[in-house]
Amino acid sequence: MPRINLLPWREDQRKERQQNFLVASAGAVLIGIVTIMLVSWTFDRFIRYQNHRNGILDKEIALLDEQIEEIKGLERQKERLLARMEIIERLQKSRPEVVHLFDELVHTLPDGVYLTSLKQSNRRLEIKGVAESTTRVSAYMRNIDVSEWLENPGLQVIETVEIGPKKKAEFGLTAQQVSTEEEDDGLVEAGSL
Image 1 (cartoon, rainbow, N blue to C red):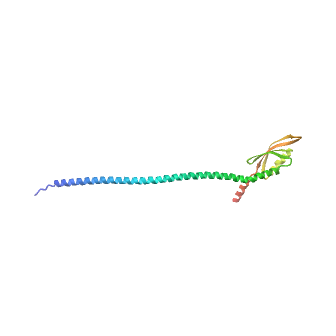
Image 2: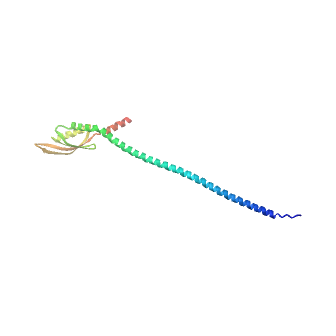
Image 3: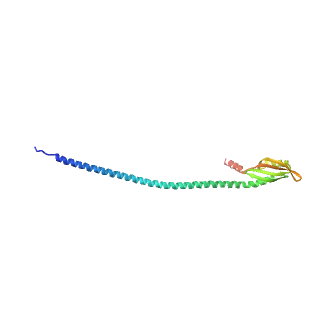
């Protein structure tokens, strides 16, 4: 029987397998490197795209912040204007009150009494004057008490002084001016019911 030597064939086969293994390993390494580079490039692209979107959002946010500041400034200006309008409105409402006040001062003043000074702080009036007698001062205070535009008379001081040959009573008193704003508020509230 003939003898066949299979060793060189096996050796060739082993070399071929080893070569195929090396080629496959190199191919796998090359495919792995290409895959890693592709994944890295794709992630870099996603990151650049997201950074671009974030940049656009940052710009828009900055614009909105500027607009918000502008709106806040306009709101502050609006509040100041509304406060001014309210003050002007109150002054407009109080215009006739001054006329009524002076008219009422004349109507409440009895004969034999004249005023020397009048000072107003908010609704409080400080009235100084001279009367022929102290009874005329009390009559003046009673007139103030029943007045539509004045209330709460309070005597501060009364002194009897000689003016020329006659004795006169110098007095100082306070009173409150009646406000029509309270009445207007009451009418509005009653109307809204």
